[in-house]
Amino acid sequence: MTKVLYPGSFDPITYGHMDIIKQASNMHDEVIVAVMKNPLKNNGFFSLEERLKLIEEIYKELSNIKVVIGSGAAVDVALYYNCKALVRGLRGVTDFDSELQLAAINKNISNGQINTVCLFADSAYQYLSSSAVREIFRLDKDISNYVHPIVYEGMQKKLKRG
Ligand code: ADP
Image (cartoon, rainbow, N blue to C red; front, side, top):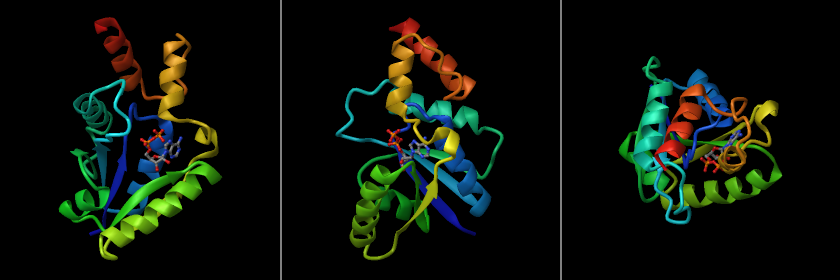
């Protein structure tokens, strides 16, 4: 049984992330999506718990996709859940550069135990990011091409709550 960990901020999860999850779940028995606490990204739109709930809701019928909240090093979260590798999505050369560096560091700090599997973003979502979605939403423009209806609804509810 192969299990992989897909760590990220997912604030919010987009169709780009979902495409990577689909690709990974076609190749592995189980994909654990880890909503990671990121001290460098403080002013989030959703709390970690809200992100977790939205992703859980989207995948509630798929038993091979699990969602957790992780803190600290992604490799430690991967080892904790017995994952063989980290999954990351590549949109372009900028992602490639940073992911290459991250993969090397992660292999090193896990004493060679955790490798990184990079999957290519679908061409339709090559330019999609969570920050772009948040920005388009703040401009009161349609984000339905970028996020699942559950996320869209969650963002509207959150905005109303203030
Ligand atoms: P973002 O970079 O949008 O803030 P995350 O920190 O949640 O997203 O990223 C988690 C992983 O998902 C990273 O490997 C990132 O490169 C990847 N990713 C983000 N957006 C996309 C997309 N549109 N298509 C494919 N992979 C993506």
